[in-house]
Image 1 (tube, rainbow, N blue to C red):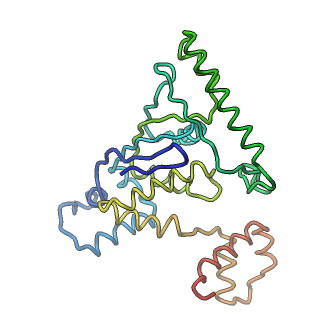
Image 2: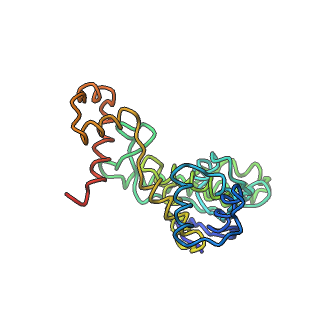
Image 3: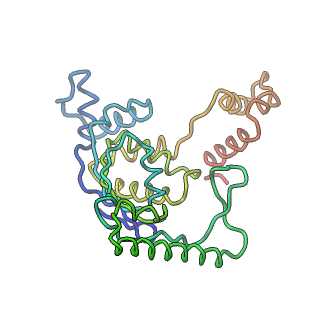
Length: 273
C-alpha cells in the first residue's frame, strides 16, 4: 500500500513479517501455552493487557519495511529514531532528481511552545515567492556544477534541506508504535506528522495487525496518563473528599497542569456536552 504525502512525497509498505498471532505466541511462550488454541476474546484480551501494562517485548517479533520519499529536513527528524534501520539514496553516488518541498502556507514561531509554530499572521505570498525562487536558484547552480564536471559529492553542497530524498527503512512494531506516539502528537512538526498519519492509515488496513492497532489507539494514542497531583485532583473531585485542598493541588499542577486536566475532563465527558 502506497500513500502520497505533501507535494512530492510518499510512504509505501514494502514488506512485513509477523502478525497479531506472532505477538500472542511470543507472549504465551513464557507459560508454555503458545500452541494452545484460544478464543477471539482471549486473544484480544491478551493484546489489550500487553499494551495497557506496557509489556512491549512481544511486539518486537513483528517487523515492517517501508519506502519513504520526503524532504531532507523531515528525514533528519525521522532518523533521530535510531531503532530503525535505514538505507538512503546517496547524492555522492548519483545525481539527485531535484524536487523541492513547497509549503502551501508559511507558519510563524510558536508563542508558548518555542519549538513549534502557529498560523502565519498576514500575507505570506511574497515570502512564499522568495522561498520558491531560492529553490530555483539552488537547482540551477546544482545542475551547473554537475554539467561543469564537478563531482556529485561536491555539487550537492548547494542544495537546501527542502530537497527530497528517499530511503528504505525497517523497524519492529514496538518501536514503530513509539514513533507514531511521538510524531502524531500535536507538538510534532506538521511535515513529519503527516507521514505518521500515513503510516497509521497503512497499519489500519493491515487486518493481520488489527488487534494490536486497535488496542494501541484506544489505550495509548487516544488515552491519557496522569501524574500524582493530577490523580489527587480527580480523586478529590469525584469523591468530594473533605481533606481535598483544591488550592494546594492547583498550585502543584500549575497553569499547564490545569489546562491538561481541563482537556482530560473535556475528552472524558464530550458526549455529555
